[in-house]
Image (cartoon, rainbow, N blue to C red):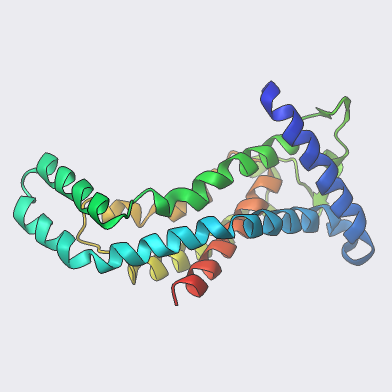
Length: 221
């Protein structure tokens, strides 16, 4: 594990372990999985300000849609000119396409911490007790298909959440914009990720993507 991750992973380890112990009287053998869900919800609550900024940016871009279509009609055959004029329009309006990416980008460190939390045998100089935790009999530290059949259920739920996300975003985005058809398929990338990460990280993904869909519905209603 990279040295700069030692401190955050150790901190997350103690926090998840404490959450598992706290919820065990209610959740029983599902305590560690419940702790991951609670941990993820806590992360998303911390990131609400970024989500609000992304929602405001999306609303601003929607308002600019007529201007964007005019630029596409005028400079559609000149990609460089179109990109330049789009950047100019966003600068003048105070919006940016990158604002919408903020919630996802800020989450990446938390996802990597969760990945290492269930991929590292020794944390803070002691054996990683979380590696023995299970979800319906499958180790949370099992990677990809080694976590079958539970990971297949999680992947199926992620596919459903991705579909709901796409349906919702299609109501907000301009499908004629360059690359829009490709971008709308990106949510399905989370399904592919489950083949390479620990079951615990897949559970984190399922929780956070579900939160994202509900959050967008609330902030953009």
